[in-house]
Length: 218
Image 1 (cartoon, one colour):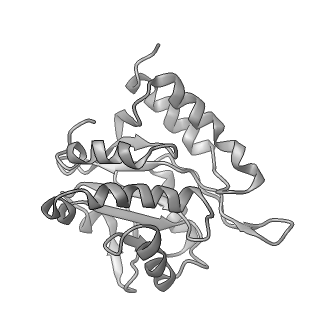
Image 2: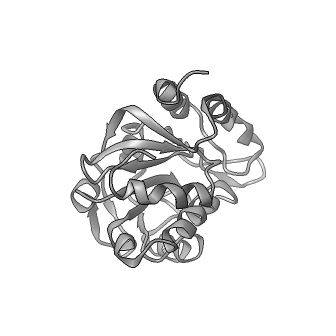
Image 3: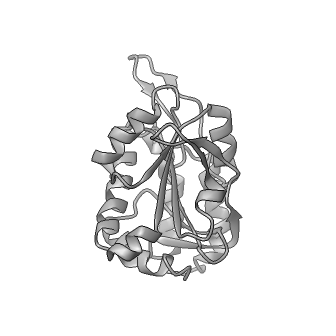
């Protein structure tokens, strides 16, 4: 069996090309990522050989204020996820799992951790809509970001995450295709050095967050 970090680059390359339809009949397109993860080992975290530079994203937060991702998360442990509020399954489950683990941290650690949700459906996910959704699907302290789609798409690509502009299915349902990976950034280097797939559980995050807060490998 190959070591996990040896396959990290392959996983990221697959992730960039593999988009999740979040509940549509096209959801099987996420299988290549799952298969690669299964071949690595049972750990949820993939420690990357070549960490990602934090994307140069300036968007709008849930309070309608300008949010410079690099500047406002500098030197802080940060989790970043791209998704949308109308997603029926993967997105709310991911944010809920992170929130469960987050609530188990001591308050001092919660104050350090930055959890950032970037919408892939900015036309419908206004700052106000994001704020309301995060209160239920995640935590009110999580940061929700919206803006113009090309900027968001470019930021995701800097992390090897592919997203497509929302499209309407034959039944009228609007679907946003996006990679379903969570990237963890180190407070020591500000680099994205750990990747989590959509099958990561609340227990996985609970186990790993204390190490991520210190910039350590889980």
